[in-house]
Length: 56
Image (cartoon, rainbow, N blue to C red; front, side, top):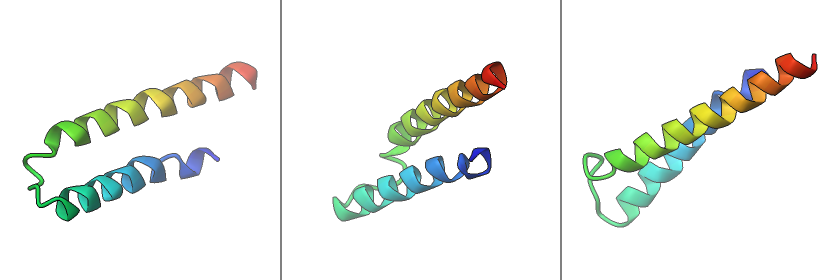
């Protein structure tokens, strides 16, 4: 399951790019959203990796 964690931020960023394009925003205007997506995913993935090692 860990090997698929890298897909989550890629999929979320792709959805964000689609949203920006659909509403005629540039990628530069959406940079704050990318930051939030990457920070959320780093915390989320870090939590689950920590739980895997703690419970192993």
